[in-house]
Length: 424
Image 1 (cartoon, rainbow, N blue to C red):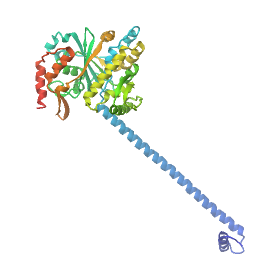
Image 2 (image 1 turned 90 degrees about the vertical axis):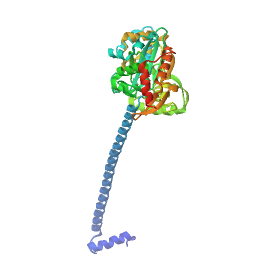
Image 3 (image 1 turned 30 degrees about the vertical axis):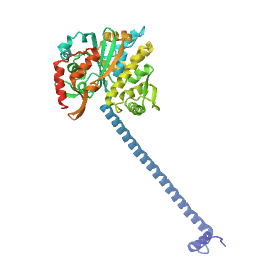
Image 4 (image 1 turned 180 degrees about the vertical axis):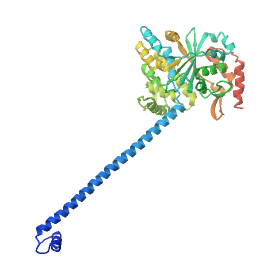
């Protein structure tokens, strides 16, 4: 007798289907056939489930790839916006270093060949009309060569064209006899007449008329006699500093956080690899770290402090350049000369190089001065107001040329009245 329920059920089923006289083997064959069908169905069900799982995985991967691509595009757009909004530096800070390189021996011939890679720009003779006749005849100012230094954001390297706001503006004044060099940052948000009686943030002058209009603005409103300029994008700054072995700077906790953020930005902007700072204090900075330091503008002091950082980096790098050997000089020159635009000719650049060891930065400040500036919203823009302009111009001439009793021109006085009107 069958001993379990399954065998009993099978026996009953066999009797129903085959009758008592039928052989049990026939029933077993049919049962096995049914079991085979069940197994095949189960296998097909598992295969279908696996197929659907694979399809789901493919769909999920495609969705994840779409999300990742959208996030990446969004991130790139954010970085592009940051670049258009504020690219404050900066290789211009090192441009002048290269011009003043203490080159020696055989490096001079190679340096001269490199100078031919510079994008030379000839300024129009009309620029002379922006210089006040009294300034042209000023004997004291005649003893100095004044050069405008511009830092712009230009991914297409169209450095001398418009459509580039000069996020950094400096006036470099060199004593022709002693080589004494002084730097003054003109804060980019300063309200000035950018040309034709249009008062806006001064960094708009370069965007509207390139270096020609920007220099004319500086000459007419500050009583200067600038006829030359140097403009550079920021891409070569890190490589130039690295060529000189980096610089040493005291970094605060707050600055460290911003530096790490800016380095991440530059990694996406120009593909530069970087190493985050992990502690504050005296640090030996690489090129990209020093570049990030120059870009900080959100700590105490805002844009005023940022301009000070830029001048600090310029001074430190110039000291390194003066002690550099021929190989370092050539390496640094390779980093920046092909990325700059200037009105200076090859022989003028060579003259700076030959005279470099006698040049020292003895003064570094900003315009307008802290004592004579305020803030106001003009045409919807938050501007730095040189209040009074006449007092600021007097201070500027005292710093650059030692003219303690300088009397500003009528043009400066008229512009001063107009600018003050935006505050009162």
